[in-house]
Amino acid sequence: MFHYYLFFLFISLIKSCPLKTVDSRSGCYCGIEIDGTNYIQCQPNSIEIIPEFTRSYIHDKLNLSSNFIRNITYESFNKLRVKKIYLQNNLIEFIDKQSFNNNLLNYLEELHIDILNNGS
Image (cartoon, rainbow, N blue to C red; front, side):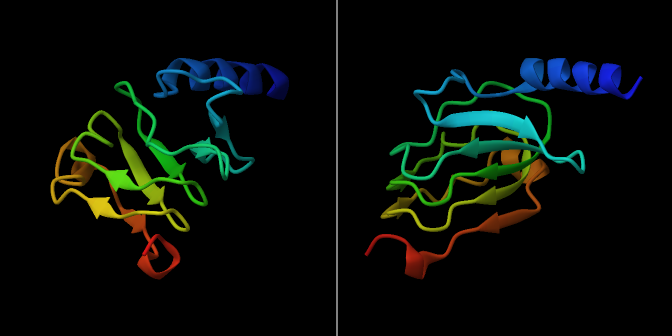
C-alpha cells in the first residue's frame, strides 16, 4: 500500500513541477524529501539565469545556491509559488526592487541571500 502512495505522490510531483524544462541538461529538477517536503533544486555550478517557471502548486523550497546567477529581475519568480528561496553563493550584481513583490509575496516565508558570499 505504501508503494502505491509513493507512486501517486511521484506522479503528482511530475504534474506540479513548475520548471518549463526539466532535464539533465538544465541542471534543475523537482523532488520530494523523505519528510514530504517538495522542492525545486538547481545543481551547483549549472545555471547562469533563473529558469523560467510555469504556474505551479505551492512548493516548499527552491534552491538556486552555488550557481552563477547575476541578475534577479521583476519576472524571475513571476509565476512561482514557493515558501523558501535559497540564493546563497551566486554572483548577484542586480536585484530589481519588484523581484519579490508580485504573486510570490503571497507565499514566500523565507528568503536566503548572503550578499557577502555573492558577486562583488
